[in-house]
Length: 147
Image (cartoon, rainbow, N blue to C red; front, top):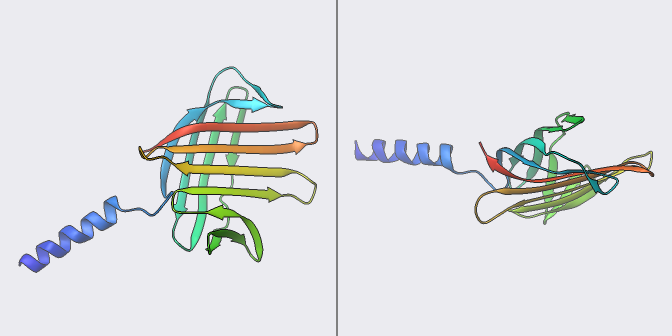
């Protein structure tokens, strides 16, 4: 009987409180900058991240900013090998258990950069910049908490 109770407790603790690295459903807010100029008001942000030692996936991301909303489609999981993030054979950035830095270069010349870091207090620092054209860029940053 003690064995069954201990097993149930261990299973409950493992399944409900342990999550690797950046995994979680995150919600927070922060500023939007357009062409480097911070806009009035704050963006409301939500991220659903799945992170294992072998893969990284932003399953859902939503940004509601004054005058602009971003809803991103789920990405394909990125592979992790030796601290690098890969999409197929292409290196997309670096990752550790608490920090992810990545970039995407699009065929039309656009560039997107990401930075995500889990702070010691359990909050998540987020930064994302997209060069939509040579003359137009957006950057969103903020602090998010798990919900």
